Image (cartoon, rainbow, N blue to C red; front, top):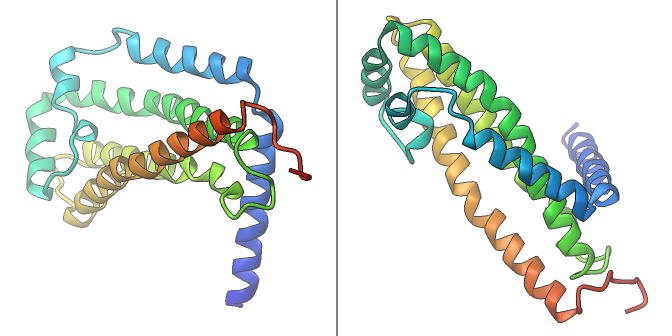
Length: 192
């Protein structure tokens, strides 16, 4: 059973990886970047409220989460639910953007037989943590004044995971950039 699960997971990662490699075009990457910058620049919420947001912190305790959600006030909690729902679009854009950028760089850095080749899907793990974080925070807000401590801890673990995933993602981009520069930004052929 475990071998079959691993094989299935490998097939999924390979399919996703190939999908991103097939679409790794500068114009699409630029379009996603414009979308991310555009969404981040929208004045959609009270700036002070956004500055208090749990997802902007590296970590927090369950007690901090409940205190913050209470401090939002009723109107703030409604607004924060919609901010987190809208954040799903941003997560999709930046996750796809990082996967496509990594793919574009890796095509110019490594041959497809490289053990690093499938790491172009790693940004999806950062996106997963961000999605999980948003779901947890939305539920915490919706069940307020309830205080489900395990859910609050899952939220903080997801937030921390999201930020920690930034390190390997940036590392992949640096590695891909260095490799692409070394290869003169030429697409690697299998013979080289």
